[in-house]
Length: 491
Ligand SMILES: NC(=O)C1=CN([C@@H]2O[C@H](COP(=O)(O)OP(=O)(O)OC[C@H]3O[C@@H](n4cnc5c(N)ncnc54)[C@H](OP(=O)(O)O)[C@@H]3O)[C@@H](O)[C@H]2O)[C@@H](O)CC1
Ligand SMILES: [K+]
Image (tube, rainbow, N blue to C red; front, side, top):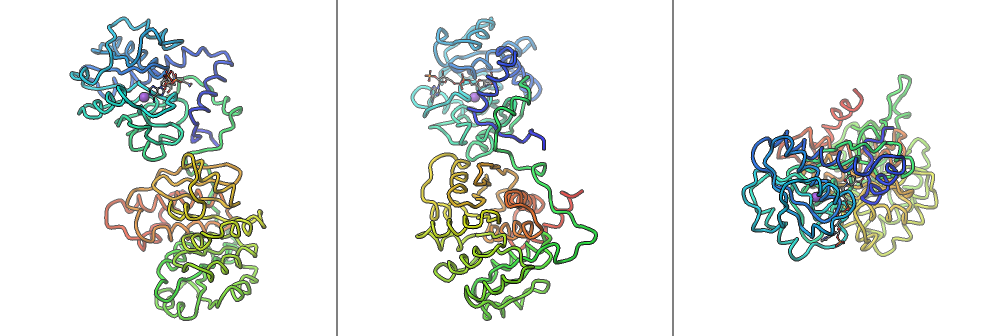
């Protein structure tokens, strides 16, 4: 596995920097490479007119001074404005400020006019509190200009760990970051503030990652391998997935789940539920089988069939005791399980009962797929970034947690996590989550491990939305797009 999709928190990036320096690389060389990368991007993308570089009091500002020098050498008209005292600059930032042989203005809202492009080198990884006062006014004035903005590392005001806006933040067109992306480039709202994110190499060797041992990645097909179709395989070797049906007037959600599981490659898919529900399902499905199940005891009996290896429960399953009993019946067996929607909310008053049932069989994969509302009902208010919250939920529950959104995070109890950023906004449509649950289940049925199936499922789901492309998408369209995505991935 390559390490190019690794994400480093600002704290881990600080370690990468320190390890590189400890290995003999001079720190000012890193800053020089960082600033030069910014200058080169500005020169290439915005070749004309005056460049205004706003420098802050730390090393982010130091990168700005390097960029200023380089752009001037390239023949550009450059203006530098500093927020903070020149005398308080220290270390490499002070060194490069000394090498800047032009004037340094005070960075003020009324001194911004005249530039054709603006470089935001105010704050980067060192942001550690809300932005207020004069700096907040400056950032608001910058955002009010109609001038392209290139952010150094992250847009000032964006927390590189959480992607949160700390009071106020620059809205950039391009952000140039160094060595590896940071979570804040992908988590919302940070991702929207960054514009395009460009990664620059600055001379930190990949070997430092061996010491840092990061466990967060940007979701990508390099991270997992889809199940292969074996020549001697048959439907049972590709798994049998059972999807619990909703009531007679709520059958659609589970049907989309079941269709998605089948399209993803599960060998057999069965919708199980009350006879009255299955009569409705029977009007709609052909390749999907139907199996009457009348309560938790009869579900448990069904699961004695050893060929059934995966169950999805939750999509329009109904809230309350019946769903709780069904979930516990499933978790009492060995099958891989996807818990979605009502299966999660039904445990809002007794989450520990759910978590101990999951933890009772740690070898079997359980994936839960809450959106923010379902997450909060089950886990309460959890502090920290979206990655922190998904991780702590995974640890507490023993499940792989897929915390959904435009920046879906998948986390495992051991702390491994990914941030997914391929999902277009059109995927936020009724029933989309039911399809996701089915894709993940289809992968589990074929023997993928829980974390991999969840990551791959989230990716495939995002790509179906991208394949659709424009407006008008409804969730029923998604399962039919899965084969094309799978074909692309297995090319
Ligand atoms: N690591 C690497 O490998 C490399 C890192 N590089 C670069 O270094 C950057 C990180 O530099 P950094 O650590 O000096 O932090 P930085 O973002 O400049 O800010 C620190 C200053 O901001 C201030 N301050 C903080 N919050 C504030 C607030 N809300 N409102 C107001 N002020 C606030 C704080 O001031 P104080 O707390 O003292 O008042 C402190 O002085 C990184 O983003 C990248 O660009 C590259 O050169 C390549 C190699
Ligand atoms: K910045």
